[in-house]
Image 1: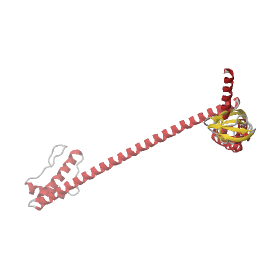
Image 2: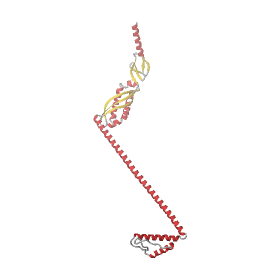
Image 3: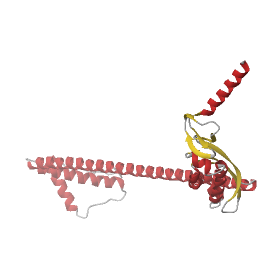
Image 4: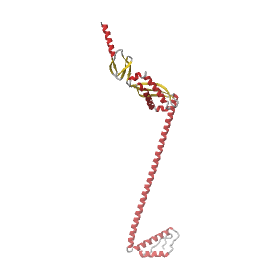
Length: 313
């Protein structure tokens, strides 16, 4: 009896498991009845008829990252490069993914590879390194349009590596080295140019400052001389005014005549002292008039000292 009960319990459990189907979250099951599509089982528990309903396909609705193997691509300038990448896709229609294509991962991978080869063939080798983003977007657009009947959505494609031949790599390294040296020389020349410009501007400013200083110095000297002349002229004018005032008084004219005569005689005496030759005025009568004027003013006759024999004349 125990064995029969055990067998009966196992059969009941198997039947229950066949009747109740539990679908995990983010999964979809395709249920067939008598070999034909019946319905799509989403996340949760479902009831099925044993031996009649069968779960034929199970699909993950999460995004899948599929590694695209490396492949050789020929660029526009006939350089063979090896390119690999990663394809990101997800199932959005489980029914189409089940009955629209037999192996959607293989088919999508092959489409990505052919689209990549076509895009690489449109570009030169240098452009393949700088146009990665554009190549990725082109591959995604083409593959996504092609896989729409299969119930798939291609979200991204990323190029991992682009590997050119060793000879091309060596040439690229030499080119990069030449470009770096060129940029270094340009930077050095730009620095020297800026240095020379700054130095010339400094010398120019220095010359301007010196000339401005000289200008201000000369202006100040001229202003000083002008002030000096002005002060001297004012003093001379004041002296002349004082002389004129003194002359206008009694005896002023006699004092002036005396001063003039004295200066005349002093100058004549200096001529006699400095010269061995006796120099006499052309009009000796003027000398007599001078002596007479002096004698009237001072009351005595003036004398002239000579340097030859010390005689009075």
